[in-house]
Image (cartoon, rainbow, N blue to C red):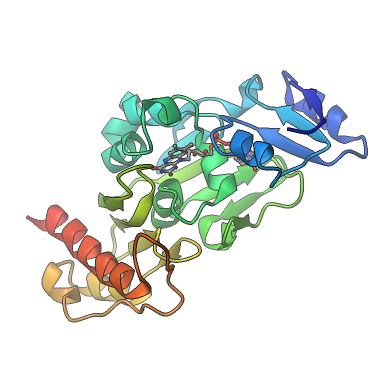
Amino acid sequence: MYQFDFAKPKTLDDLKALREGEAEVQYLAGGMTLIATLKQRLAMPELLVDISAIDDLKGLSKTADGLKIGALTKHADVASNADVKNTIPTLAKLAGMIGDPQVRNRGTLGGSVANNDPSADYPAAVLALKGTIHTENRSITADDFFVDLFETALDEGELLTAIEVKTPTRASYQKFANPASRYAIAGVFVADLGGGDVRVAVTGAGPCVYRLKDFEAALAKDFSVDAIKGLEVSADGLNEDVHASPDYRADLVKTLTMRAVKELTD
Ligand SMILES: Cc1cc2nc3c(=O)[nH]c(=O)nc-3n(C[C@H](O)[C@H](O)[C@H](O)COP(=O)(O)OP(=O)(O)OC[C@H]3O[C@@H](n4cnc5c(N)ncnc54)[C@H](O)[C@@H]3O)c2cc1C
């Protein structure tokens, strides 16, 4: 570690006052990623701000057409919350598949989405469920939010406050997990939002979460495994690492998509 200043504000106003200085600010939520990043000196902020005591970033409520979830909501709370289980059970299931109990009891929705790890689970759900990402000053659609590898539309020092997602008529998340970390080698979230609006979001396979638009169009016309079994997933630009080649990942994405549709139509 190296030397940095530390603050733990209790309100958004206290946070705003802290930011008025010249210091380069970084937020600490669950710390599951950031503490390791600080130790490796991949992040070296002048001021580390622990946001965990700010009540405005907490809470989970139903909206007219879905759920609004505070940035500080822990994965374990999304997994066990009755409103999530009743409204979007697939989202609760996804949260329960993240990492291990320790990670789920520290890691937050806001931290995961702001970090935009290419193998994280939530970005697939937020993109497939037509999510809106709220910050202190604006709202950003998920389609505009996830930009590239660990890159989002957030400006420097912009705080993610909450995320809204829409309730699908049916949805399934299929993940092929790294057996050690549980991160997705590939994960596919299929959401049928009704009225011919189908979304298929892929995580783990590419540098950033993305949609399979040709699969979406085919499923919008005919929501069945038969409708997509003749389609191919391109391996161009997909990730290559010790776990899987781009071709393997492309094949996996198609298999997981078919598995999701099968689950929803059987
Ligand atoms: C062993 C292990 C296994 C894991 N397995 C999985 C897995 O299977 N699937 C998965 O999806 N994830 C997995 N994770 C990631 C984990 O679930 C957390 O989501 C992730 O670490 C980030 O959340 P956090 O709250 O810990 O954020 P932090 O580590 O505190 O912060 C991460 C980044 O986000 C920024 N940030 C945090 N909150 C905000 C905010 N409100 N506004 C703006 N910026 C913010 C921070 O400044 C930092 O840059 C794993 C992590 C570990 C350590």
